[in-house]
Image (cartoon, rainbow, N blue to C red; front, side, top):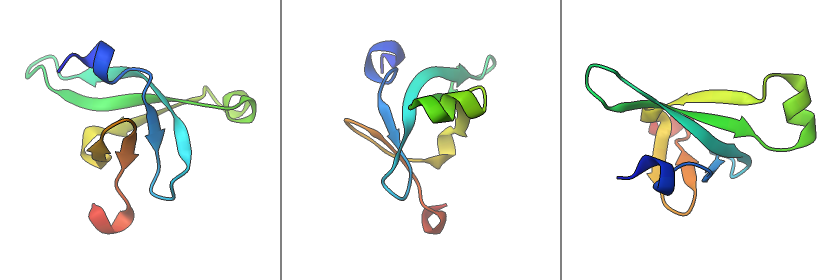
Amino acid sequence: MRIVQDVIKKEVVDPEAKIMGKITDVVIDEDTFEVTDIVVKKTGIADSIKSNGENVVPIEMIGAIGDKIFIKGPDEI
């Protein structure tokens, strides 16, 4: 998979079908070279003002990858 072209800037959708933001970066384990987390930049002015505007989501929380990235719900974890 080509991370930059395939994942960066995709929208991330939470279990309630709300858009969390877009992927801006990925975290890679330096020993295994596996992606461990995604960095999601919040969308919308209000969210960006409240905090640094980013969430780090563990890769285990991702339920599906397609046109958008879908986060698993509590019953899927």
